[in-house]
Image (cartoon, rainbow, N blue to C red):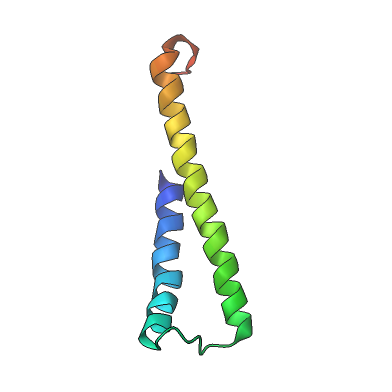
Length: 73
């Protein structure tokens, strides 16, 4: 859960302000091509990490409910 919180915190502290700036500039990106590419890469990575974590948590809960004898706890 801590890693999911960390990835969401990084997303909200790094990418959301950049998106807000883009919206404030009427959809124009004013920070250069390099930062644009980095933003898109970080967006893809952080969203994928969040989805991976939620999927892992859901799978763990599914196994714990459907096959309680096979879990370690």
